[in-house]
Amino acid sequence: MEAKAKYHERPWLKFYHEGVPANVEIPERSLPEVFDEVADKYSSRAAMIFYGNKISFGKLREEVDRFATALHELGIQKGDKVALYLLNSPQFIIAYFGSLKAGATLTPISPVYTSIEVKHQLEDSEAKSIVCQDFLYENVERAGAGLKNVILTGIGEYLPLSKRLAGKSVLGRYGKMEAPSPQVIESRGLHQFQKLIKKYPPNPPKIEINAKEDIAVLPYTGGTTGLPRGAVLTHYNLLACGMQVQAFWPTFEEGKEVVPALLPFYHIYGQVVVMLNGLILGATLILFTTPDLEEILSAMERYGATVFYSVPTAYQFLKDYDKTDRFNWKGLKMITSGADTLHESTVKDWERRTGAKIIEGYGLTECSAVSHVNPLGRPKVGSFGVPIPNVGAAVVNHETGEYLPPGEVGELLIEGPNIMKGYWRRPEDTRESLIELDGRTWLRTGDLVRMDDEGYFFFYDRKKDLIKYKGYSVFAREIEEVLHQHPKVKTAGVLGVPDPDVGQLIKAIVVLETDARGKVAEEEIIKYCEENLAHYKVPKIVEFRGELPKTDVGKVSHRELREELEEE
Image (cartoon, rainbow, N blue to C red; front, side):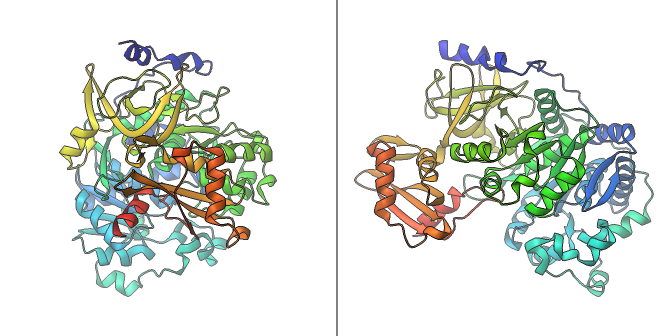
């Protein structure tokens, strides 16, 4: 009972920044309603800057309304699923709000997905319409998902003339892919984004939206079987997360922020924290199709960026990048990191290089992007922070479900208005993930964490990545943290290899720094671990590789490593 009381008391509240409320009131409004209100209020302000092309909120709203009208005329009705297979671009934002305004539910697809992955998401989500980057169309065609509407758009459509002439410079690795010819577009009855925008007036249909019940987005996230599954997020869920985050960061000023949008919009972090939060706040987004650091730093300086959102791999690279110093990082209101564990060695090197602090946060697709963030002015190194307003959190024994006292490691449970309604067409997964406890619905995150006495939370591992060696519980992340501190190690992934005698042997897969490759032996890595870890945590197997499989946001994919191991 004492442990339960500790979480219900919310000890973290006393560390909130001055002016941050324990709870905020979330209105039952649709995202298009909120967007229209902001667009009218800041109609002459730049909503986005796309490689020098400034698009005002007023112009953006007009194109959103034209696109919504076009979808309605194409037969899109309330509840229909529309897929977005796009890079970060004005088209993504126009199609996003235009689809919602037409009453549709969106399912964003990663631009790096293959035709097989595209097929799974289209069929599972029941999407019959797609807005697609023209050079990605081949993957859609190969998927053969029986689509009714395919709307193609070229990246150059919103580029200024100088960039359009050298269009592939903003595509990075996508530049080699070919768009379909005009003959192919015409013969297959495909629609063109710009023709639809020009053809239809800004007269969208009047759709009644129940913010708490109607699904806004079906983002896909990894499932227990390896196949991604859709998280059901309503308009209310997404608006709640936006308002909770804004309340937690009171230093932000409405209509004054400038936000670099380098995180991909198809991913929940970029979509909610950067795109939705930015636009709801009346901020100007600086859009980037690919993470070209030189271009990003130059634009941040030119347009006066006020905040920076990114992921650990970016900070790991930036701390050693020769052009990082061209921007005054200390002048930003906030620098944040999410989507993966931020290693302490990266934090220290970053602060030494820039003099600025990184605020670490935590979230999942299932909680509309964010549940925890370090308080402004009171961050703890190694912690992903405290629950944001309206969010409850607890740590329980992942096997028995009993509350654990502060200091003990268990599974993180979270609850609040930003938590999903469930998994799309996965009732068993939903029952397993959303549980009733003390009259409240909690999300089982599958993450092993601990809370200290002050209410700060610390990540240990994914539950599925916990290694059992001779009865000991070993956290892969703890070993990876030590390996990252080795001066010759660039990155590492740790997993358990089944063994009949000890349960699981600990295996470290190591990527060395370029100048160290071929010069470091397995014994050196093991010895380093012996000097910095308890005996039962020391890897028994070390494998060197040139690279590790990564997720779309750059973190080591333990799921792919496990799958490789199973195949072996």
